Amino acid sequence: MHATLNAIADELRRLKASGVKDVVVSSETMVALRNAVETRAPKTQPEQPQVAPAPVVYSQLRQPAARHTAPKKTEPKLPPPPAVTLPEGDKKTRWDALLNMVTTNPVCLERVRPGKKVVLGVGNLDAKIFFCGEAPGAEEEIKGEPFVGPAGQLLTKMIQAMGVKREDVYIGNIMNWRPDLPTPPGREQIGNRPPTEEEMLYCMPYLRAQLEVVNPELIVALGATAAKALLGFDSFTTLGSIRGQWKEFEGKPLMVTYHPSFILRTPTNRTKRTVWEDFLKVMEKANMPITDKQRGYFLGK
Picture: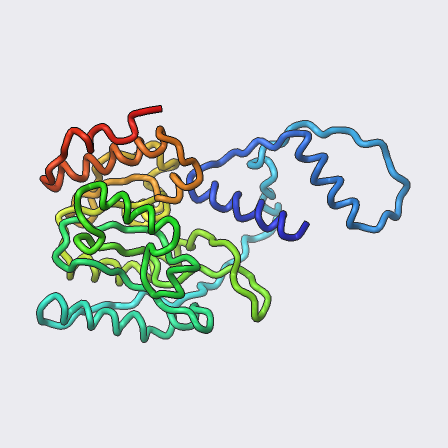
């Protein structure tokens, strides 16, 4: 039961990060949850006849602000974002210096579990295209490299479908560590959570420094969290409202699309085609050759 509730909570967090504000819960689901809880709790009152509740909208479950009380001030959990100044030199020299800054940063190190690694971007320092995701996951914090898990493997295939190799582009994340979840001592963290605004603001100077070193022609934001960090946390409500549109980040063209995990959750041709159309726009912007075969990917049922 505890694992089920954790899974429900993780899914609600993911939906919220994607811009979903309302989730309808059926009466059958509410009854099932109530029955599951009652079978675990000791009964102190006689059983009452079960009455199916009306469907509940998730947004209605939010607790209203307490009346007649001053709002509590939340102390910042992180220090101010670091000032990142790169040394003079060629790209490799500057990137190596940046890697040392990130991997020795005490704030980053404090938030990495024992045996895990801080993560910086990887790829061609002369890349035209800079792919930017959200944060490392379980596989990434082990290897110390972004996008190496299932979503990363899919991203690699999508890059290859563009006619280039993973090594030809640059791949990074907003975050340099995996956002933590409450985990019993000695256990591995299960699931991921979206980073907070404060966490992303702390890591943004390192992302800007990577962009300064690579100096790509364009950026691809993978998912709502990355897009909000680059465009502004209140810049849009749902990713679908801006997906496939060219925006701008510090003078660079920015394409907003779905995270590869979106395809993993709904692996239909329609979903794949939606993301692939954004990749075609990226290829056109980067003056990459596009074959008829590439233009026709995922058009079937």
